[in-house]
Length: 223
Figure (cartoon, rainbow, N blue to C red):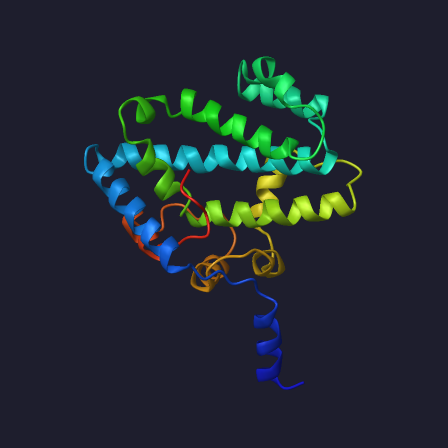
């Protein structure tokens, strides 16, 4: 096979997402609202909150993948979440019964807890939409999302002898290979930027507006 043919074959395996006209319009409306909210507060506060959202999202994705693979929230996972998110498990355990979709329900509860506790100021002051808009378009967020999908798929097929700790999972996410990114549906320009970024978290690559410009029409819906 010629080199050019090999490149074409590799490209054909990538899941490329192309937004519809409706999705593009919805993304533009969300961007305008996020910009409106962002102008009301110091940029440093927004940047800090965005970073917190991305960090907590990684915990949510890790928990989601394990719960979906197991079909339940294992006791050891519930204990970790209870330590990191006080009062969450105790109040929601009855709503996290074993079965299909338990990972998604756990994911949603963690995100709600984060909004009510970690990001309480942005929610009560009316600029949470700006936080989530820029956070879901962060390149580290996209890498974690792709790796979580990869893990969930493979763990369901073949559960590991033991699951990685959250810290181990994050480290692996930072080093995930191209096959992980190619398997995730996303815009090709974003995939290329993530690959070219190399290892390590992709924070501080520029202003929030630079990252947002890259991700207009992002695969990830604004919460």
